Image 1 (cartoon, rainbow, N blue to C red):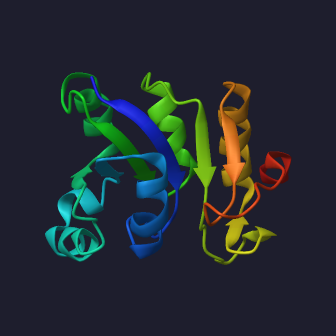
Image 2 (cartoon, helix red, strand yellow; image 1 turned 90 degrees about the vertical axis):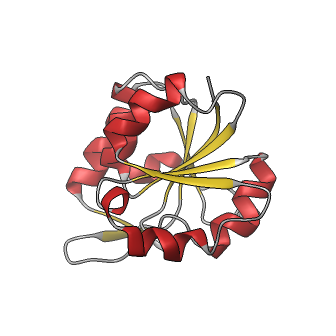
Image 3 (cartoon, rainbow, N blue to C red; image 1 turned 60 degrees about the vertical axis):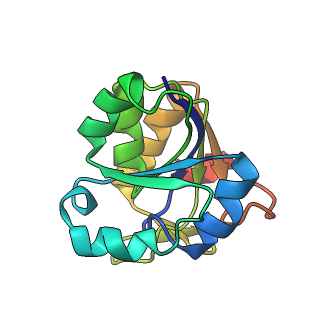
Length: 157
């Protein structure tokens, strides 16, 4: 079974900031983008692959497919999982993945969302999902860059 070393919520998913900073710092050698839309979009996958460092592989799976495959596939890999929002992170937890901490990175400003910290905006549904994640005993690490100091997770719910 693969070892999950890092889970990040970032609505941009796989991009240079993740590849240059988080992947190396967390010692990951497999990046899994768990997103139902991207799992079916080869063009987006090609663009995201550009950001994948040479020392890591990338996979693009639906959330459900990741839950099924992570338990049996990718043996010996150190996996960094990227999801678009708290709803998908909650699905991973409900699917039985062993996740102790979730980094909350970029969540863009959209109508109906309010600012929590720079580059993180949430609505009532996001807050409810973050509360459910927190209530499962999972730490929410609220910071954009690995060099940032983590903000108070209670800001999210």
